[in-house]
Image 1: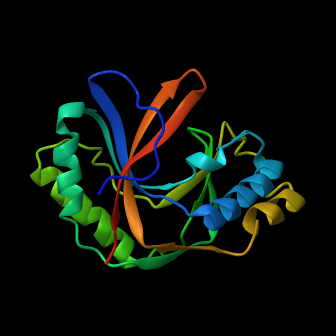
Image 2 (image 1 turned 30 degrees about the vertical axis):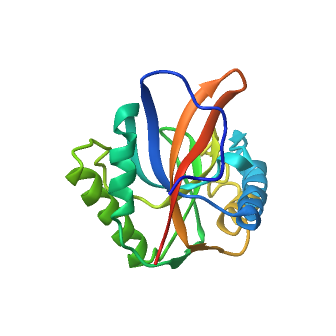
Length: 195
């Protein structure tokens, strides 16, 4: 079903897209607050609140003429709504990303990802086939060495930035990423309910 959120579309014959869980306003605020606390520990650049999300499947560049096929594939997904608690802070040193992870991700999340992969594969559309790791990116260009065991005060803040953030997943979206005069931006193209 078409999304109700619209930004000006990017130009060109290809769209760079991904499927995601998209937070509501209250959850977005909680994620942004966690990003602020973690920024004090790791530095770097906070993800703008309107860009916070949980990627399910990164598709990449798709000809615009195939977006209808991609949306039809997503419409065939039959997955239940679920709740996921994000309670772990991690930092990938190589790409300097700080993110929230889930110590006990619900199996329904992985079932949703697997069903999306299956449906997109059946449509004959390529996608990133790396093993799935549920994570919500909060900071980029972070200093992952900060908060190391040698710094007990920062380590305590890193280990317990806030109570776990519970995401009640009720739908998923197809998002286009692009660049315009204001920089990188996302546009929700379509949204599907979870059962």
